[in-house]
Length: 227
Ligand SMILES: O=C(O)COP(=O)(O)O
Ligand SMILES: [Mg+2]
Image: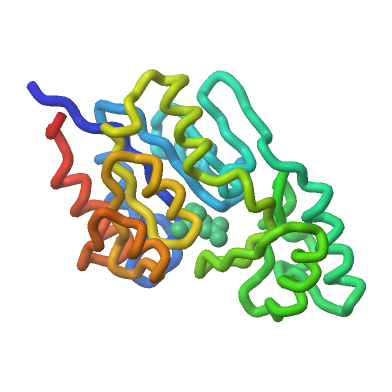
């Protein structure tokens, strides 16, 4: 019997319902039944992908914070320093702006290496301050991320692949935004969902018609048992 290829999946825009928010429940069973490693590679803070793996019922193989945090299932690696991102946020706040997530800010509460800012906040002053500290700001369509330009999802995926013993060339990835470009450059086959941004579409091997989880489910159908 032929096996399933290892998977690398983004969360927002990729496992989401067509309306853009919330995990599409149809992805749970195929992911739990997948007979190869499934890596969740996201811009979200570390607890979110860990919880997703936990509730789907799959081993925790996680790239979080756009590569700033990598969990191989045995070891956690922090590949970026959050002090610069914190300094940017302090300056942004001092200039009268807000991160836009409310007082308890569960979006950033457990972040270790970067900071996320609500898309409704002004990006230009954020970019200017970030540049002073040598950081970049990326727009995933779900948040602005103030981050070190160096670590990325792709490097984290390579570290996990090495640890679990899968060949990157065999890996199939699905993603939707600029933070998935390094993923697509790292794995054998990258698919951008129909709602993907231009950067993700340009970096993918194939752009799907289907949007959000419809796209991911179509890829799973196509690649299941092809190894
Ligand atoms: O955190 C974001 O902005 C996007 O998250 P994602 O990488 O899972 O799409
Ligand atoms: Mg995404």
